[in-house]
Length: 289
Picture 1 (tube, rainbow, N blue to C red):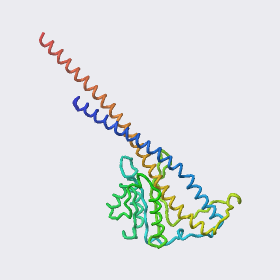
Picture 2: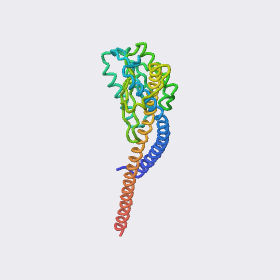
Picture 3: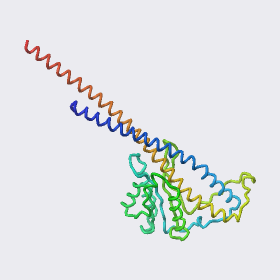
Picture 4: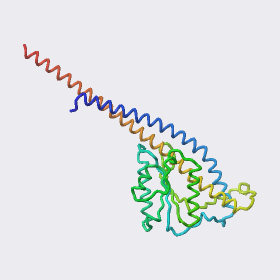
């Protein structure tokens, strides 16, 4: 059985750990609230733009875009988003696992024809370990998504797709559903999926368009694509903070439980020590008599 000094040292160590995990939980919770506000402010604009594009497509089902061209996949790009730091449960390991699964599906392609755009220190390290050269190295995006930087990456992907340097772009990220639920998703980023909405009323679909419908739609689609990538970064950022909040809460609860067990063990050992001393004293007294 451990000595009283050893148990007391463990209690102090667990108590220090508990304070750290509790503080990290509070920090992550504050960052999560900030990320949620950003998403809430962004969604109305994004949804309105998507509705506008869908309404245009509903009025002209034959309207096509070069960014929607479906080709045989001989070169693929994968945009994958993780976090810069750990202590967020299985957040990063799940992303890396899905990335490996996605790459395995393109086993017919050589490494030179698989282009990986990692965002986040953890997945970037995994990409290098797998023998791939990251197409971008921007860890700051995982911590603070910046629209201008995201738009530049989206423009590069669209340009390479139009020039047929890549035939398909996939996107891997966590979708923030709620504080307790983050859904790992894999979506097709390019070719852009044209999804006309259902026609509800003529009044809703009436637009006066200048110069023409095709020009407006071809202007809207790149904007929607950029926003989709930006939304994925915001989703992943909020999901990371939510995952870390939960992980730190679990760690704090476990530390508290362990501390209670150690205190009980300490008290039990202390009582046993006192009892042993009393028995020794009593035995010695009776022995003297």
